[in-house]
Image (cartoon, rainbow, N blue to C red; front, side):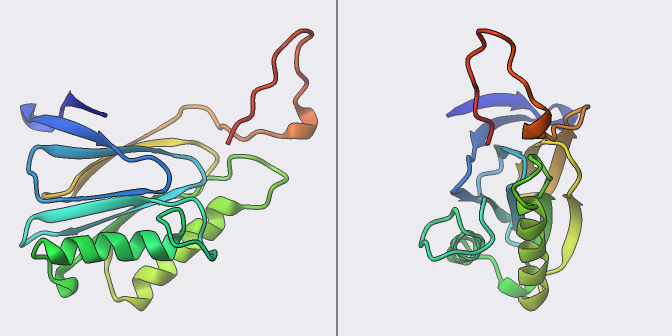
Length: 178
């Protein structure tokens, strides 16, 4: 769902929300990609010459699936979409966000997602020009694909959930966080 937001310097933009397992690639100058990340990672790629960019939002570093929920598939979808819109692989620049430890006791999925992104970009020789990875907090990301500008807002308090320490109040309805 798109809505209008104020981007720095008074620029009015349409917001395109990308949820887990989705990608977005565009050359539209008035579009900003938005997502919220916990343990998931978003790799934002852009070609500053062709003025085209895109982002993914994946929640598993590896697996057998053929959808954008998996890091390798998500990366290829964005790269191929950029190249179809005139980007050159040698000019692509990356910004990487997310990978937090959001729930204790389940392993550090965020760390694995971050590791995948960094290794993938190194193997493909795509320079990382900015990143904000790890920690214990969720992030809201706004990415302007044609300029490569990104804005990240972190939650103020750690969001780490320790199931062993969590006790539901009497009569409370359980809520599953993911």
